[in-house]
Image (cartoon, rainbow, N blue to C red; front, side):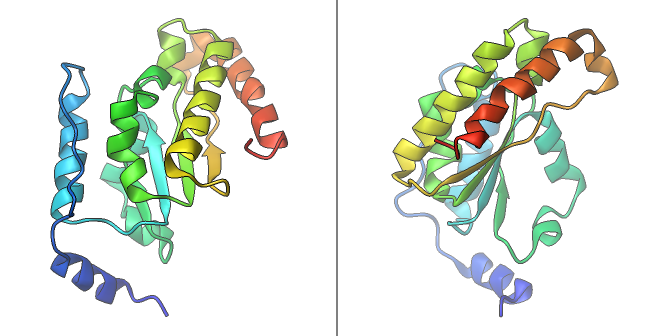
Length: 182
């Protein structure tokens, strides 16, 4: 039986990650957040083979206001979302290699696209970016059984000017899951 206190005690006693995750800052606006994730993961390596959440502020703020591990217990979860991110940010190889690949997840939960819409990115491009990101994650992790969850972009009141495109984006992503995450 999984014991949260025992796992936390073991995690606290775990040695630093060897080899360490490496992320070289490239001058992108998100470098500091990714460097923070890398530092945390190198100092206290989280469990692998769990569920990793990635995306933008919807997930990032979830991590900050909830007992994320307690909410999903006993499933090992890790939240590596960073606010303001777009699909183009998530698909960057250095980002994926820092926040996804080292954790060898069984499931990737993705929420991204609303910032893309704010920038005028067409729904088809958001879908294509997600599909490319998913294929790259599966390839990098060499895991044909890797599962993906795309959390629909929500109709937040401040997004009302782009609700039409938002709905189209969510519709465009559905066939990916109808084909079985291929």
